[in-house]
Structures are given as structure tokens and as C-alpha cells.
Image 1 (cartoon, rainbow, N blue to C red):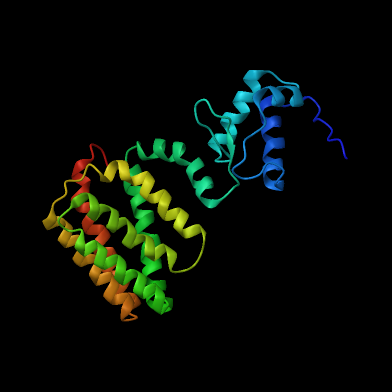
Image 2: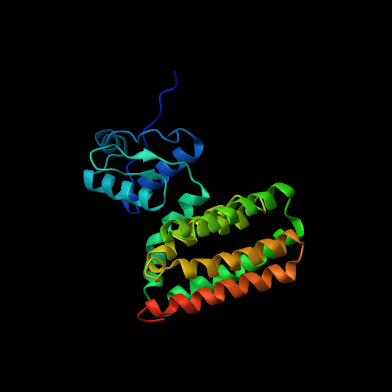
Length: 240
């Protein structure tokens, strides 16, 4: 049996950064499996020859990068790198940027640009199953019109289908990140069945343009929908 040599004590760089680098490489190599716990804190202290403070700083850094999940009274759990984790790790910085003047509008404008491209792509390339998935999402959205909380969830689900159609694994993670970053602001928007119906009809326009293979119509419908939504929601912000 091969005996694993303990890493030498970090020198010439911050000790916590050196610990992070080694643990990151072990996660990437599969030596620390996804869903498994990190070694106990005392073992990490002994292995790396560092203090408890250094180990805890390293674990906090790994958590901020989405590589481990920390819960009170439990050992940190390894999470293999993925697009969701990568974008989640940016949430703290994004939250700070959104709090700045114009931050929410800037992010929303990026969403409009991306979704305009997505609906054009869908109108040209969506498969029969993709169109059917969008149709089902639209039907669920219509059924939820009387209940604003359900309508919001089905609204998110309708747009999520657009990110699924290109079959690019990064896009659904981007949609999830957009939703998480914007939701704290969007929940402030006044909702009503009447407003829900307006949004549903906009969704319907997008769906029919995609179904009819009309990329220009799909983009126009998407822009009309999201620009109108912004004009409606902007009054809930103190500083845009």
C-alpha cells in the first residue's frame, strides 16, 4: 500500500491559500468525492501543519467558491465544481453590485440581450419536444393567473425552457443565477391577476412566434415583454 506524503508546511505564501490549493486539486482529482465530508478539522491541522484558524479560513474560502457546503454542527461536504457552483460563488459580489446605482438595470439589460438571442435560436432550431415543453409551460402559466405566487413560479419556469432549448449546460445555470439575483427585487413588485394576464399574453406571443418559426417576431415579443415588465417594476426601486 502506498503511503501518502503529507504536504510540506506552506512557506512564502499565505498558509490558508496553500491549504485551499491542495484541497481544490484533491476535489478535482476525485480523491475527495462529491457528497463526501472533508477530513475532520483536527486531521487537516495535522496534515498541513497549520493552526485551527488557518484551516477554518481555508474551508470558508472553499465554501465561497462552491467547492464545499457548510452547515452548523456538521463536517463540510464536498461539492464537485459545476456551473451552478461557479455562479453561486459570485453571488456575494453580484449582490454588492446590484446595490449600486443602476446595478439592477444593468443586470436586467444583460438578461434581455441574452433572452432575445435565445428566442431567436428557439424559433430557428427548437425541436418538436422543445416547442411542446414551452407549450406546457405556457399552459401552467395561464392556469396560475389567479394566484400571483404560483404565477411567479410558472413565469420563471416558462423562461427557463428558453434556456434549456440550446442544450448548453451553462445556460440553465445562468437562468438560475439571474432568478436568484433578481428575485429579492422582483418580489417587491405589486402583483394582481390583471397584471398576471398581461404577462401571460406576452408569453403567449413569444410562444406562438417560436412555434411559427418567426425569429424576428419572437425577438420583438420578448423585448416588448421584458421592457414593459421593467417599466412596471422600476417604481419599486429607490435608486435606479
